[in-house]
Image (cartoon, rainbow, N blue to C red; front, side):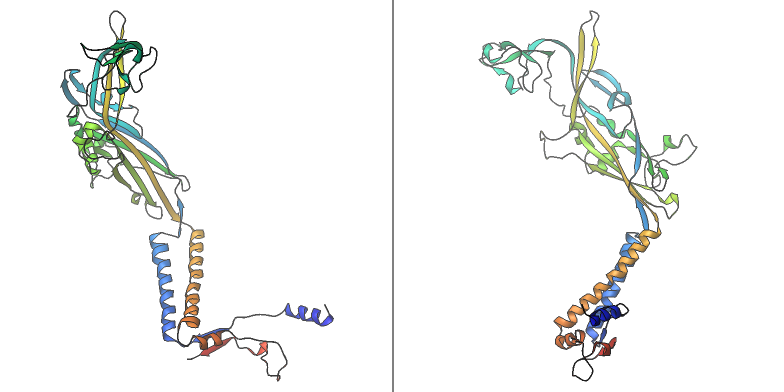
Length: 400
């Protein structure tokens, strides 16, 4: 690099470069530019700041605790159980009051079972046999109730029978009742207490009214006038999901109760209120599909005077409740405000970019504006017919 080159590089370090602007006197493009500016400004103010509250710092790491209680009694009189009064200790599983709980509404009862040998149920396809060799001893009956003993039991002169098994006998053979055992359970009540905390803002709240009146929760029920009385009638909860209580009580089902907290902490804490949503979570199939409902089995054990162990097997149908909590809290913060304002200002450049495209490519005189916007400048001495870069003006007005 020569002496002249070094001198030119040194002098260029102190040069200042500025943009050249061309003002196009085109009403259509000018109107388009203003419309784009107004649209972007409206989006920034209405959507970003008013709707999405882009000026707030947000906390979605909600910490939550759920306590549930069910209350209600009903009376039944059946051949298996006799006269019986059902209270919360009988029909709620588990009794601890968690965010997932189950209310029994229907039962198939098989009483007085003991461990001995008996015929397997005819409803088990894998238990059918024609001779003893079809019942290899020691092998369990797939989807059955016990272990094969090696004998094929046939009634009378029947050619086909069922394998003898060692199991809790007699085995369960009854089908589901046509009417729910606890059909009057729709008047039971569910109490759902929810404590929440947003750790970023150290904000606490509960869905129960802060009162010293001990009779408040004994007399209130959830409704528009009592949003802070989280006591729900069981039948109403089922109806809010679009289901019929007698149908779901017959074959069982799963209901989701969602509590949503959307808190604007720039307002008073009393403005942070819970909202409840109820939905049927299990797939509801038409008719009496085998996939419908929810059930499980459990047993109650006892011994007679001789010390022989017996049990009463119960196949319970009912409603499982899943209580879910989610939420968000927002509070003013200068950092997200600056970020969203800067993003909006940067977005304004989209208007100029779109109008430039329209101006130099899509209108009739686009070649005229293109020639004015883009000029070729070459360095040279004045008077030699070439344009000197130092003669450019920073602003030109162009009229078509």
